[in-house]
Length: 225
Image (cartoon, rainbow, N blue to C red):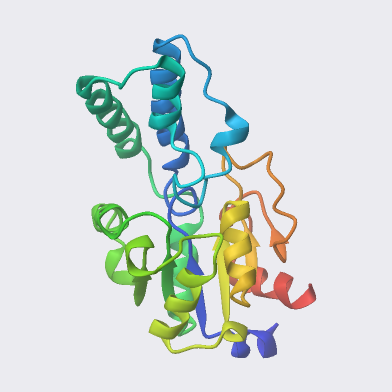
């Protein structure tokens, strides 16, 4: 493991659903709107955009098409308020801070690659008190294409000054795993409540939680794989 560790210079984290469980609140806030209007939110369509953007499925546009009319502004505003309420109730997911601390102790660089906006990611990282722990952050407004395209990871690698072979990605969704692998990184998958039933088989290692292993153990698992 020691030899492998020396080959790794950086760890790149996804944000939504990996550092903070925003995936469940975002989904629940839209589900409540659909249910209030007597409609079903198709989960199989929803999961296509987890870890990516709403380009493939836009819940507002889909519901408005089903209803045959626009959603009132007050409904959309309440949905955002509800999402915010649920997100603010979340804490940093288990094991994340310990892995950040361990990575810093090992002298590794830390990055964030997120398909969300810079305002969203930076704001929450600052609120959680861990923004300054990361050496680089790239979000969807920094690149031409969000995940599952590799642009975000390529941008973070360039920012950190490391090769893909010198970094590992930690992701929670198929779109994120695919983006990392397309960029040439080894990838660890940590599913959340939304992605737990999805196929994360392209990841090099899959764990139930970052709290299940130390960073040294995780690097060892990647080395064995």
